[in-house]
Length: 117
Image 1 (spheres, rainbow, N blue to C red):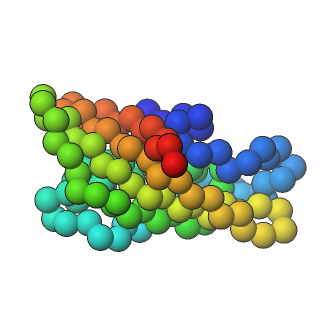
Image 2 (cartoon, rainbow, N blue to C red; image 1 turned 30 degrees about the horizontal axis):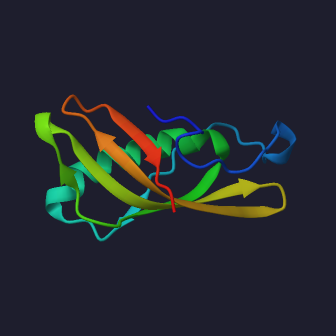
């Protein structure tokens, strides 16, 4: 499960700052540079990112692997992704980006950690 503190905040926004939408739309990430071997891991990460970002009105989400997916004991897979999200704001679009480590457990649970510098 993702939380705002784990990924990257789109800035402080109040309800007045966000355009009013009839319903929250899920914007699925577009991924670049993903091999067939790594696709299932990245797809799980992308789904979690899309669900988390939906509350902040994203209009576009892109991810790219920065290195091959690492495999750990017990079926754990770790994908390091560069994530770029454009958020809809009153008066325009606010771009945000970060590099994250996305861990997919053997049972499919996804957790995300912001990578430092």
